Amino acid sequence: RLLAELYNGLCLSSLGHTKESLEFAQNFSFEDTDVLAVTYPKSGTIWMQEILPLLLNGGDLTPIHTIPNWDRVPWLEEKRLELMPPSFHTSKAKTIYVMRDPRDVLVSSYYFHQMAEFLEEPGTFDEFIGKFLEGKVLFGKWTDHVKSWMHTELGDRIMHITYEEMVQDLPAALRRMADFLGRNLDPETIQKIAEQCSFQTMKKNTMSNFSLVPKAYMDHDKSPFLRKGHAGDWRNHFSSEQLAQFSSVIHKELEGESCSLPWSL
Ligand code: A3P
View 1 (cartoon, rainbow, N blue to C red):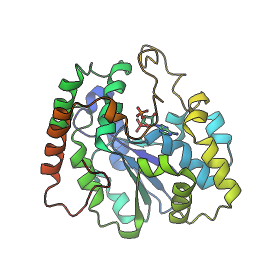
View 2 (cartoon, helix red, strand yellow):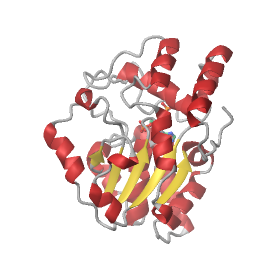
View 3 (cartoon, rainbow, N blue to C red):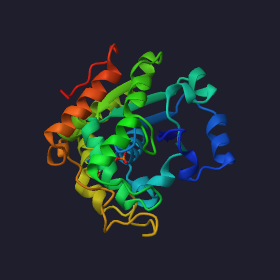
View 4 (tube, rainbow, N blue to C red):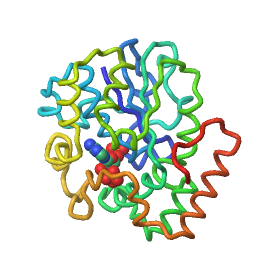
């Protein structure tokens, strides 16, 4: 089985979680063969929902052509490692943690808040930076999520990868994931999966682009879910003052942490 974990416990009610769904998460019984894709939102969650079924089934395209991505995997919507259900810690389930440049996470999230009718309007970009830094967005602070999942006792049960690494060389990223999952895939299969999981192919796949979701819930005319798929779009949005403010808060919150970020913020 394959699991996607995202979001946090702060605003669960606005995501429509019921008592039953929270109990489902807490009582979820992990098996040793389970694989989790863990992401702070807008870091590549649905990309992983495309990739992992294919890596795990040897490139059989059936699931991604027949099952909408939100139904392909159970979702455990929690924030931090310490909130994971007990069976996660006692199992041998493996985790792939995808991290993205927080400046691009913020930009992607800003547009997502415009198109997702179930979320609050983001306000101006400047206002949204303030909300993001204070963790007053649906998903809480980016730094809390990253800190929690970078320092784990999971050892070789967790692999870290960046969105930027995946954008730069998807076949290489897929090989690294396949190795971690113990799947020996030939170069042709890796290439086939990379093509299927490219931004352009996913954008056309109705099972993956959220076009089946009613407009009252997601309005793609305001901004498509699969929006740009670039690394570095923050350059088109931040002023130098905003960038300085953003970087200083992120640095301060990560002060003393041994994880160094792969981007110079
Ligand atoms: P942008 O808004 O910058 O385009 P999540 O699934 O965690 O909500 O993340 C959504 C972000 O991942 C969006 O970023 C989306 O376009 C991007 N994304 C999804 N699939 C992708 C792919 N195949 N290649 C590159 N980016 C992808």
